[in-house]
Image 1: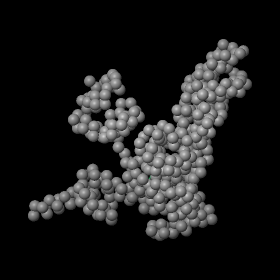
Image 2: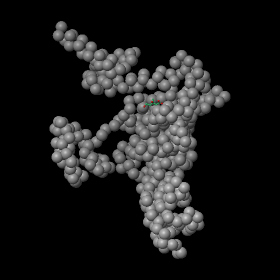
Image 3: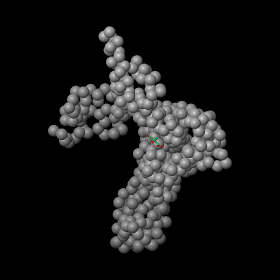
Length: 448
Ligand code: MEV
């Protein structure tokens, strides 16, 4: 029986049994694997199971540290959760490079979060505009109880704007609401306020004197935060005299000016061409997502927002920019990052809490600065490789461990392979052939 009602009501072991019986060619093995990834501490496992419906096991990703980040003069060891082999190595190497050149600089340009109440109102726009100040006063006071705590922390509702979409969709209007959510990402706070606004908007039109029956017929379609937060933005940058690239450039057989020029050109290409911009920005999000995940933030929200921001002028472009002026190199990332340092998963996930501790329990603004700096470091490392050695050298060196694990190499075989491939090009077939040859040699030696 391959479909089921009430799956969520089964116990975890019943769920695993059902899955193994119906969707596995080797049920015993599947059960064993799923069970083996349970956390040994039941209390921890209960917390993790509580995150989603129908949790039956844990999916493990590496939790890594990129040391040597200096951001606004302060040293950090940054926790990163990511599976891609070369990402942490690249971030760490860029952190080290810039540590010796003044470190990363970052500043938060804004922290405004947004939400929307989408509604249909079959009256005249003029009239809605006329009564809107009264609507606004009514809405602001109706959510007092919900906003009280946030106001005490210095946040709350900043403004409510009426947006008119009548020319594209008859009778469609929107309340665009801006919020300050302090150290929290604020999704629950924003959504609760918006849903209260939706109820109050309907009541307002029921009670407001002198409206026709048609004008009372407001219909709220939906109320939800917007993940597009173009005013919740952080800027991170690095800079140095071009001559500071001399050593790196020399190791690549070029001079510092050529290296800086090639770097700036590569970033410019990502400004001009959306195909390159997508990959360029993906490299930035290699770093951003890893910190966002490690600190229990919402990487889907952050990516969705960043990609919209990247095409705010109508074309998808690089989120970073590079300037060479008077022999000075300036490389910068401007990126929206609606992150929280309290609440949500940041408080619940045991490792997310630890990540924040490792980062010195930053405010949301400091966390935005750290995350942007890692995104910029990642982008710097990727572009530096692309314009010099190419990306595969470093990538495949890191990937060697994965290949060796796949081939079930022993410790001695792995050590021999790591040594051998310091000077050889890594590919799956080259590593397999190396392992097969050494195994054949070993068995011949044994049989002699
Ligand atoms: C790979 O995950 C990321 C890069 O492709 C980024 C880039 O091309 O800038 C190396």
